[in-house]
Length: 469
Image (cartoon, rainbow, N blue to C red; front, side):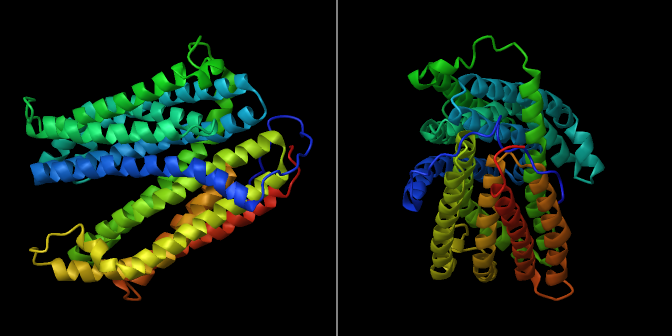
């Protein structure tokens, strides 16, 4: 965690500007940008939840294979989306500096890199059956998962390109279409699943293959919407994003790649941590694993608001950086932190007031294990009040650091905090100390707390430096 500090300006140090907004003004501006982005994240979760529900209705082997295949797809997607996320602060800084060309360069090369990553990602998905069998997965489930992925893998191209265009629109502070495109995609995904999984509305009954086709269709539809909007809307015509698209720009390519790969690994480290805790929870017991799955779904929806605030913080930090406005950068950081803290308080109140009601939304009351799962879920949601505060805080500070083009040190902080502190703590608290499922969530909270403190220290240190290398 002693990596060289990044250059946090695109060129020579600009003259300092006065911060024209007070704290309340920064909070309003951050909220206007964060809410559509948070809504798009929630809509994205709705797509995943719809897939899980409909495959569960169709059959248990299909659900198991779909879950397994989705996990591999997400590994490749998270790695690739790091480069798309790198576009956001770079485009924001260029836009604030009045460089239309700078915006166009980084977005185009973000698209180039995403296409390359998607092409490489086809390989593991094509041979996934052999990989799953080598891991000890049952033959039928492994074969079904491969069958799914050999169709769904083509959706990796539009999925990653959508992420680049989302970053582009967010950087230009036009996130509303991102929200609408995701909502339309969620509705289309449910309709296509209903048609092709079950054979409704005259469509063939394709089962798991139908779910894969629905995913590719949904991702392609979202891409078409965002391409049309970013190419035809008057606001974006000056950027000529798609003109002479084939021309390489190796300097911009190199910078996007340099900033992007640590972001991808950071996202993968956190996703891997939560996947590993599911394995540990399975060792505690089936009831606890079911409660863990429910609690994670609830917390994930609430987390999307913090992620929206973090995305807005990245953009607004990038804009302040591009203008050389240190006061706005720090005041904007305070605004993002305060908004996150307010929503943490609201979330904690919700968790403590209605934990049983939230858990029962996911359960069949006729299930014999209903009382035990509810009790375990209520306990986890109670513990999550501590977990939420640190998780929301660390993702917002991570967004601020990305806005300052600082990605390698946060990657190292995240890897150490999640896997060097959080994962061992989960195991020790759950098993040697006998706290079970609650211990696993306390371990998660500890790892996230360490990440939050370390990243906050780094942000304060970097933001106090001159805005030049």
